[in-house]
Length: 253
Image (cartoon, rainbow, N blue to C red):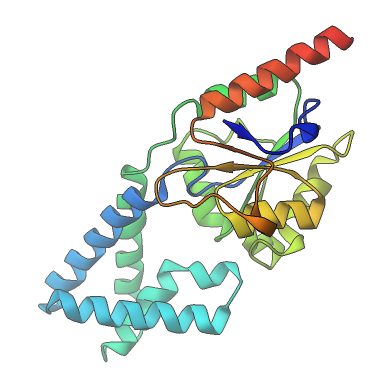
């Protein structure tokens, strides 16, 4: 673990906010498997070349994101697939769009695995009486399903999605709603996430959070305005930091 601003880690936090995707679990392996499952199903259903699917899906995703921009709906797999079918000249095909979307998420969840020691860290935090919340982009339905699938529904006090907030991070709304729900006793809030802009810069600028970046393959360490106060690769490192600060609190009491 690398601590770049040691003065910000002189005590336990009054609350901890967590991102979800690529923070609690690696997103890419699950997404790759799920996207391939949908690709195969669409190709077999319509007897088309894989390249036709690739081109139509890419265009559909770009159009949806351009239209909906920084909202939860801009990440909707269902909207991507609906628009893809329309681009292929098949109309909305509601039942097929729903079927393809369900294929994606079933495959995604069956291939998603938490990073090591996530639950152990959350147990440590709960024993110390520190409230927690998830602050995440995407829709409530999808992110709730992930939380339940991982068995984390009893580990977090609150969850705030960008669907509830109306904006994706780094907008202030998701952070402020989470803090408003927790109502921490003090002003020391930790934000743990992987994205240097959305999680790190957003957490610092919007709620003056102490920022900790989860580093994994393909994630660059934030620099300049996006630089975190600390960075870690394993949740065991975070557990040791929490334990150290907990012992420090005991000594003062």
